[in-house]
Image (tube, rainbow, N blue to C red; front, side, top):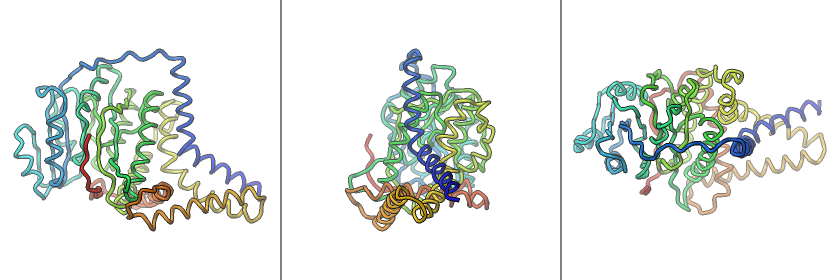
Length: 397
């Protein structure tokens, strides 16, 4: 009996460590090997300026839309080569009225709200440029973002380019902003290595660009459409690149409650994507792409959260009925969850010491996976949703 429980315990330890840390180390190692045996890729010209359409889907964004427009119009890209298109379907505040004061912006609006991807699907037929840029209304782009992201399309093998998401943080942020900021720094590094090894496995909707001819209308019920679009293009054999020097800045979630709402939605969308993209699990067909997808995404939305529960209870049993090693490991587990509980109690405090916030954010993320799974099973997570409130801060890039 003990041997079976020990096997379960160590197998689950491997799954969790590999999903969150081990894959990063393995990826770094594989990239180092590739650099030794591969020729340095030929740099694409930074003077490549194709026409682009910058699409911003905005729903009730009156608080930030003016700043977004000003930022978009000031980007370092030839004015005659870039069109800014904003779609505000369903908005009931002053967003549409504010946009009207900017004649340089092409504005599309209808009163019915069907969700972000439905709005994007509706306006894509108006796009005539070879490259389409997508960014969120509550983000600020760095001045060279467009030219840094589009030069990759000089390579005909590139179908989509993912920009970098950066979360603006202060020394005294709450648990949500602190944890989110740390998470995205780590994710950005993984995406950079994923791209260098083979392909990014999922672009963030805050900023990405697509070769327009490859965009296909997405089912309006898809929850995380940016992830779905980028993987469909990768499955079609095109490269999904990562460009860290094209970045979108936003503040962290206003509270852990708001971040949890966002994470539950993403988790439900992740489960939905795994089902809809099930052919991508076939490593014999998609090779390295499948390996990256399973390692970086699938495990985090499936086996890793379940493994955490098995680890805790199997460790408890082994600590009671086996040798001291398991007692020591259980003490470390208990300390981790005590730190998480302290982070929960201090979640809305603005502290300079972040030691409790990272364990809490990790625990909250995995709790969100279970909530998201049941929402997907019950069909209660709509693609149309109320966005999470962000912390208020001036974001400079």
